[in-house]
Length: 302
Ligand code: GUN
Image (cartoon, rainbow, N blue to C red; front, top):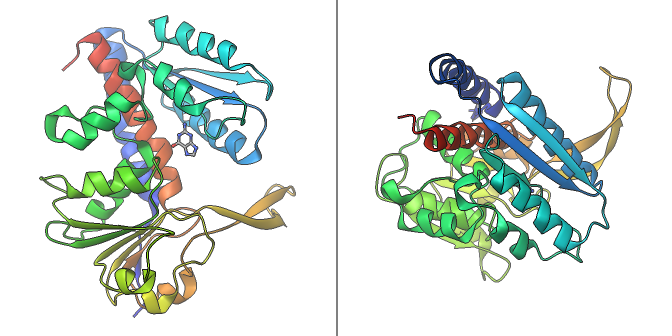
């Protein structure tokens, strides 16, 4: 039997409807408008596409939003000054510096310069630590992992006691989603394994997974025979493997492929996310959710 397709597009739309209501209420009752600034350095096509999507959604939800484009050769000092400017701007509740940054800039320094209380990406060491401690301590969960958890919960899979295997150990996805799923509480409480390029037998680990989360950045890495029948497969990979002509716009658009061989995997898994239309739309939505949360905290709204 073919797997249930977990549509991130549909779940993201539901959450955005809920958020729009919340934003309208905040404006009406408290005169508070959530503010988001995205900073893009250079012109990496994938980064432009992500940042454009974030700005578009912020605009649709009625945020105050601003896109700050910087040239690829901007100095680290100037970028740090810019971050500081937005740290001090009361209209701004969320600051996002799109990654990766050019090689001459120390990414860690820039992320550490963002006010942890405006760090809607959840990448500042303080927020990473808060997530690790868990419970009420966690403030801003990183957006892609938060979206993954939401998709698993809404797909109806039991997470408590489940074997969760995470493929990939990045700071943006692998490490935080592993941390989220092992916390005590609803939508988590799982037994978590992280596998990576140093793991001896990837296949053996993946085969044990009730919930398999793949964020390796390697197109088609996970083969159908690695998947436990009936399991939930979350494919975080967004790999640009070529270009094609869009019938809709007549323009060239990227061909995207996940880390999982989707067509074969869907005949074995119980549920699976597609690429595109799976995790991607959730990342943007969780960023909006974090920005609304930040605006509420800054304004003292319960
Ligand atoms: N680059 C890829 N994913 C992300 C993300 O979630 N946030 C930021 N800031 N950069 C990214």
